[in-house]
Image 1 (cartoon, rainbow, N blue to C red):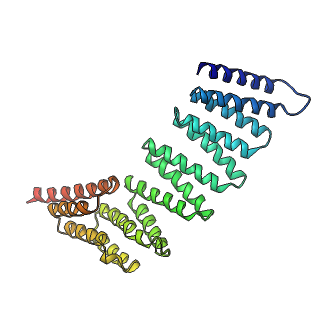
Image 2: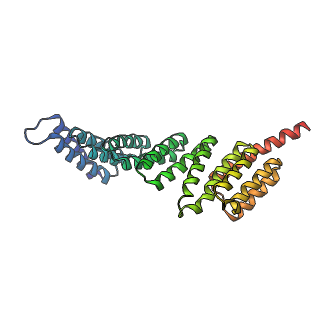
Image 3: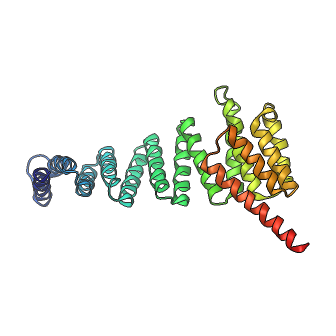
Length: 289
């Protein structure tokens, strides 16, 4: 490890010397780039991720001097991969630099991929607003490149985080748009009931029983098979329990569905919000009587 760190230091110093000097033959930036690359590899072998990341950033600068934008973007990605292990904000900064370069040279698919990676880093930090922002950017770029599957995955993430942040109308709009798109594809039709369930749960959190009932009618018109699904019955029974302001019934409906189809944490969060709102309403009415 120490030996590799020493080698990394040596290569980095030689590269800096090349840049600060002058050359008659060839380009000093080409020579420096080669030395920075060797230096970064040594630091990686030594597992000195911060040093490796910083050297890859210097390598990217050399490539930019040589007007090699693709190579510069790749160096920023290498830097980000090192920084991910020790400093996520540095990783995000490097990935943003890479995205800007990939967009300049028209590599939109690559840009979308790294926007998604930034979103996932924010997701890991539980910074849901930033995660939503970058999943949204990734979705737009994937869509422009007609990478529909990846675009839809990112859009679903945007909808999920919008709901987490209580931006229910936005979440509902996205889920419903995805459902309409899925219905056009025979391979994805089976997934529509799950997407409509997500939209319906967002409606429940808004607490407007009339809006929930109207939505269920719209979903039946959208997908004629939906009314025969467990997801439809689940939403319908939940809406009925909210209409009756019956917390006990709401709880029983959730338990029954969960016993057959395990609810994930996202759905559980939304159901708990809806239940708490219903309970507050019930308590208020009890106080008045």
